Amino acid sequence: MTDERTGRRYNYRSAVGLISEGVVGWERSAEDLWNAAEKAEVKRNARVARELRPALPAELPLTEQHRLVKGFSCWLRDEFGVAVHHVVHAPNFNNAIEGKRLWRDRHTPEGLQELHEALFDPAMTNRNFHAHIRFTTRTVDRDTGAFGEKTRVLDDLKTGPEMLLKIRAEWQRRTNQALARNESHARIDLRSYEAMAEAGDAPEGLEAQDHLGPRTTQKARAAGDDVTQRMPMAALKREETLARNEERWECWSTLRALERKKARLSGRSEQIAAAREAERKRERDTDCARIVQAQTEQDKRKAVDDAGSIDLTTVPGGGYEAAIAWANEMNTNRTPPEDTVGANGLHGSSPTVEPSDDEDRDDEFEQEIDPEEYENPDTVAATGKRIKVRRKQKVKVRLKGAG
Image (tube, rainbow, N blue to C red; front, side, top):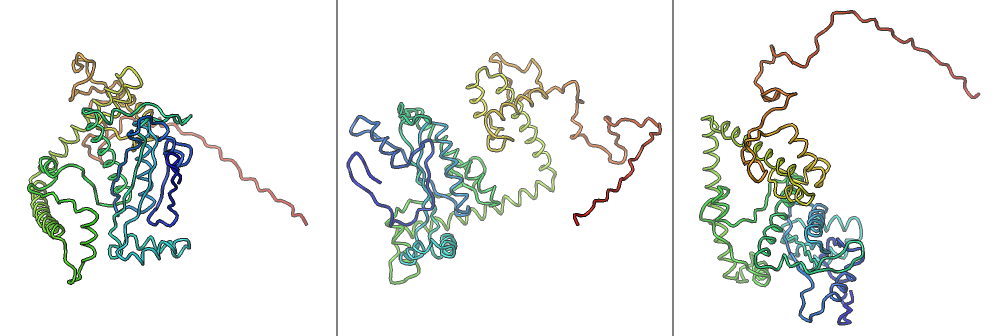
């Protein structure tokens, strides 16, 4: 790659560790993208790019890792109107010489298979799969490739932290969906230990681990089980902290399992499940009402983004149009009464749902019935008349052979 601003060339042909790459929101190469980004700036100290370096779960295969990173890059493009250059890097090998050999032999099917197996082997690599997601600081027109205004929403003292939390939440949501799609029980949680404990999702007293950095981490890996090598003090403290956290997690999980078993035996689980289902339905009805009552298309899209009961990735058909159509259908079938509508035209958090004219007060599928005595009200009674049926006679056709 050539930097047209300085005239320097950078050769990555002998570099190892690149699994996949791609460009989103830009029709040409990554080299052209960053040269164009440099030309779009006037100030000599201008910032031309932002970078995110998320870790990728080792529970995901390489194809799913690339899919996750590319999908997230598309979200960044749609959310901020930027062009994105993304790459996925492989973990480092514990034995650098063996790692170079595997990368050198990857051009054959056997060598590629051996490399993929070695990347996920904890005895050979640190399994530190990660991505570099770089995106422009200016908006980029998809059709012409022209650079526009700066994305100040990411720089503002008020909106910047809000956008950062939104980006983190989107990465967490997409990563956990990818893990669930691949039938993995692992999940990521970007909340602090204090926030997780307050929500009841983690034990109290978990200790944060200090970041070791690349040099200390490399020294710790080089020491390993070799008694002649001295383990860095920071790495020893980190291992002690991890051991204490593991003990807290184990005790907390045991107590939680006993409490759940006690709740099941006492019947509280059914009550909690029914209350949560009712709350979920109220939230769904409120979200649908907000989407339907939005006046403009932009307001409808914002209502879809703010709806906690709607996930665009799981809506049949996908996209905002499908979500809005679904909300219109749900709102038509479930109309809240007028007295729950506030002055702002939006329904309250707990609207009362009235049934429509063509359905019973209680939903048919939610009634408790006796299977032996239940009569379907939609069943048409038999007339008692006999119906004559005329059967068509089978006709045999004999074809003459060519000879």
